[in-house]
Length: 174
Image 1 (cartoon, rainbow, N blue to C red):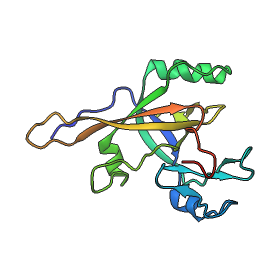
Image 2 (tube, helix red, strand yellow):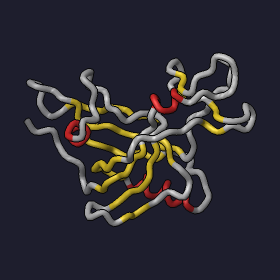
Image 3 (cartoon, rainbow, N blue to C red):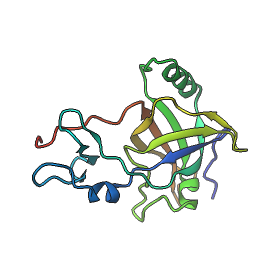
Image 4 (cartoon, helix red, strand yellow):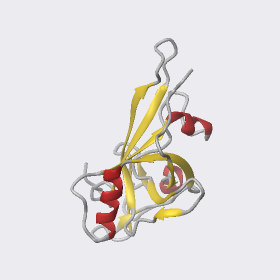
């Protein structure tokens, strides 16, 4: 069954957040855990007012990706010190995720909010962009089903990136 393909693919390197390793950290404070499964985010490490999110990552992975012109424009703005007014979007193909074991039995991708874009490369491995500021996945949205109604499969995954992790709650708040 034909599932389509990426147009002019590049390769992205992603460092995935490891919730189990984050959860193993015992941050200061009563009853606190490193990873809050309710809000799907890491707690703060260090001082409550100036602490940084607890961050532990799995080994980075390489995935074919379609990079839109607007994404390159946004990356150029970030490199120049400007935060683009729109999110940076990159498209992946589910067939590539499946080939690397990154799709759960329920069909959901293992790419999640908080994963970090490390580099964008050409298919030959030449690095095209290394973001000066870390770019984090803020949304991983499955889109479309293959071009067959007889046996539909998920087709594309659109990732939205921002140059900062999603907002974190202060410890002890809901």
